[in-house]
Image (cartoon, rainbow, N blue to C red):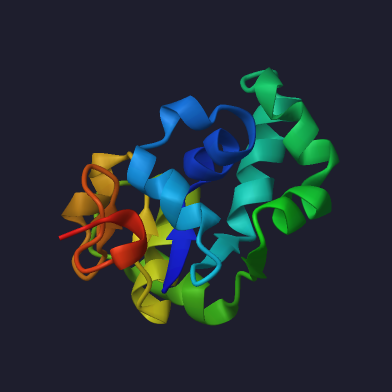
Length: 142
């Protein structure tokens, strides 16, 4: 199973796992899970950290490569295809970081692991957070 983590899910997985649902912790610990993290994530974290809005992100921003390794995650680059899909989304949400994440989830056919319900309003984006993903034995899902 391959999943795309939203920025806050990455930060919480690295800094405060108590904010994550138990099923997600199990999913991240399962070697069968392929974790994708968008290149938009360090950009968003770095920007918010440098603006003083997210001081708790410092260890993640400073040690980004080690954080990817710790999560056994692949970096998903931002390509022109994602940019064009993000720009063309019929979605009133204007946050450019969220638009890129939605586009990447759509194009790659990946579930987006996010607590942010705004993604529920994007056609063809499957957001996972409130309940374990269906049919995943590693998490004890239905």
